[in-house]
Amino acid sequence: MDITPAIEQQLNDLEKKFKAINQKTETHLEGLLWAKPITYWDYIQTDALLNLQTQRTTLPDEMVFIMYHQVNELLFKMILWEVEQLCHTEQPETAYFTEKLMRISRYFDMLTTSFDIMGDGMEVDQYMKFRNTLTPASGFQSAQYRLIEFASTDLINLIDYRYRADIDRNTPYEHALEHLYWQAAGKDYKTGEKSYLLSQFEKRYKGEFLRFMEEYNTINIWRKFKQLPEETQKDATLVKAMRHYDYTVNVTWVMGHYNTAKKYIESVSGPQEATGGSDWKKYMHPKYQRRIFFPELWSEEELKNWGENV
Image (cartoon, rainbow, N blue to C red):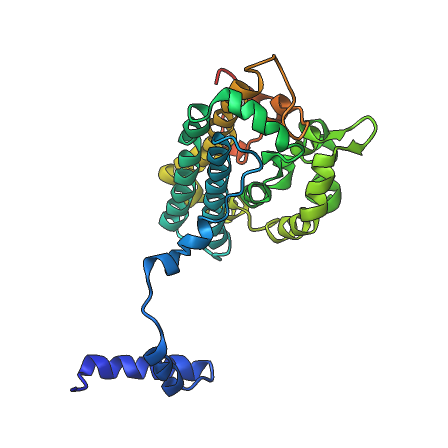
């Protein structure tokens, strides 16, 4: 066949690409002769994905529960993918910053509206049976969600409100970790004893958490925002995106989760503990821990009423 100018240019571009990494172009071209055409199921790894659901009981609605939480984890990964790009961009443009925030918020919007899948999509009787086989596991143990929090704001905003006065940016990361708001769901602060739920969670992820806290200490979303020119920080569209993200994650999404948990946990025999034994109400409801990523972007009145009347 004739070598058109376009093909010649592509061959030259390939030569430059492979030369840059000390590879032979002809070797890679020959490899294409033997490569199989890609299919949708191979690219998406459909078979592997659809074989990741393993029930612990014979109750059909447990499958809904498993798949729903796996979808959540995939969305958390999508969020972290966007957060990483934003936070590791040295000087993000205003439009880029805003677009990344809105992408992240849309993922959380999906998470919020999806609670109907659990809230209305499982029989209460089935849930109350299979939940006992899940103990002591809990959604509390979603490590990706903790990473999202670390990458969103300064650690002080994630500290249990009872200890914020004694902790600042110079506090060792391990000490800060011990006083994060979610420790209250798995620790007896009078005795210092940690529940099995919390101790296993930390055994698996503590090292990763400490490394991530250090990495994002100066490049989290709030720090990136404060590094923008003062005029850019006043951009109405960007500020709106920041506030939307903050409220969506810390109020709207949390309350969707809270109301769904309440429907099931308190449905049959009155108030109960969550599967991991945590005080789920004080852990989840925004009015208790007042998790706010960007407090400087809210008025005194808004801060005062955070998590109320929702």
